[in-house]
Length: 393
Image 1: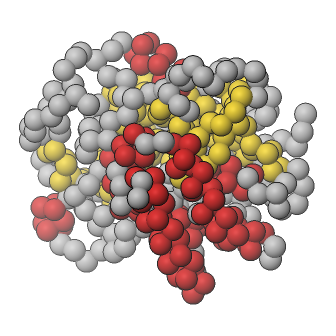
Image 2 (image 1 turned 180 degrees about the horizontal axis):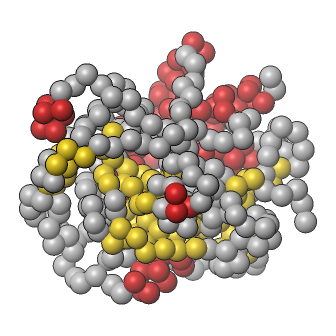
Image 3 (image 1 turned 45 degrees about the vertical axis):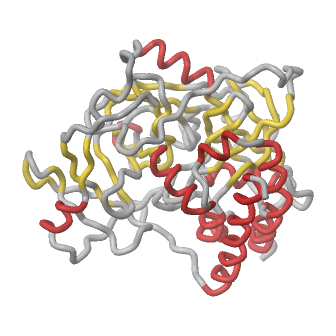
């Protein structure tokens, strides 16, 4: 059995089980309020309000223990929103929580010096994409979101709540067309297909396909797309610009300088014809977890990317490595009043491995055309059928 067949066989089993569970389980809707944090003291970090379930977010404490490492003119489009949620305190004692929820900084993470901000900005924006999906008629709405190319063959990492529209556009029963745009302003470049979207995320959120806003914590909210053809005559034989990833745990730490880049569209006049890339230098404000002892999200504060349309955008560190993708934001009238969150690449790799039985590196090392074909032949129809079932109600 080939590596790609093994991956898809594991996914198929999960989809089948997920389909059974979906019939009897109600999707959970999350509150649209900011994540609350309470400071204990300067040495213990933040109070741990560990959630009772893994679908809620909690801050984690940090340490500076050193560890060794090695380099590693159509209807207007809806701005693809980001999800909101809040943790609920649990009965776990603070002392016990603080003892388990720890993150240690990786000292000297690379064998080379950090780049200048301008260099990180240039390489990140070169690989940044805008995902535009235009609805023809019916219950679907047009959306715009962001993504980042992570492989020269055209693999795009984005959010599941953006990629679900690309998934639906592959069905002849849904009047929806999607395209990949690049540049600033964004211009049409490519057509893409789904390479992977977590069935567990679809099962939890399929009922929200009609909703005006995507709600959730960001858990499982990632997906992979594959560029399949050119829409502007550009040959696909040449390698595409891409950003190297770093999937190590806690590679991004509180106070670290990072770059956030996306195609924000919430406050723009037109989301279809005049979408521009934006990038901001900021620092990591807080480390967050869905469970314990793992850095699953990072808080970036109120930067300009904290708005609809930024979903799936990139978070790069000073060494030009992708360490996160934008996924959620808290409420606020302006971006300055919001707190932007990004899923870490460590979490994405960890969850992808849990869902498929294989690390993300194996997928990227394999024949992505074959893996995409297997997914879209065996898994995608099951997921699409769930969406169509919701849309036909």
